[in-house]
Length: 232
Image (cartoon, rainbow, N blue to C red; front, side, top):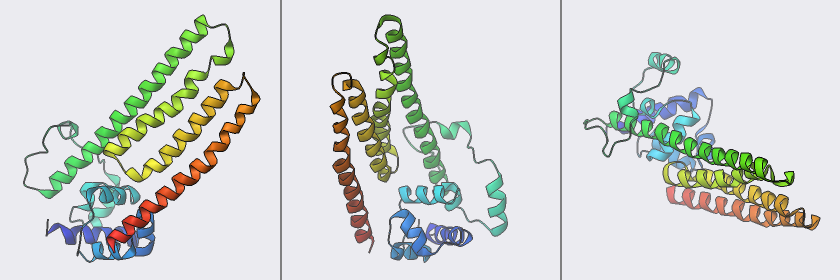
């Protein structure tokens, strides 16, 4: 791991400079302090795997690229080549590949991210499949067409719940603030549409979203400040 620090430091610095970004710009996008970025580029410390994945996504490269010793010529060739991994690497196993190589371990983790993304997407599609089935049943048996499209409306907050669960387990937890906002607003709108035939005053329920959104925003900023303080 000690030999990996200068490799990652060099790659982060090169990618940042190619994008004409300062250390402060990169730190702002990652919600870290510029001192933390400076330590990474001086090879004094190394980002954790979640931050490395964020950096890879930000510069449109793979984790494998960040931990590889790339020359300038290899960098241009790398961007044009297919980044897919062999089928056996993309399968989830109980243990990572038994190779004494840090690069191989990062390639394994990268393949897990793709597999986890596929599982998350498949579960969300399953929610919409159930909503479609409910739509067909209501369309056949219900006389009132008002409730015909409610399954698709409620599929939005349910999909947000599924996304929130998998994102909390496998992906970047900072994305949870956006997902929670989507969940809150879609749930409020679903309730309003459902109860609207009873009274048009139910639209006032939407006002609950204003303090709710403020709380979500303040919570997200509190987490960012705590993380920045921890890196100083």
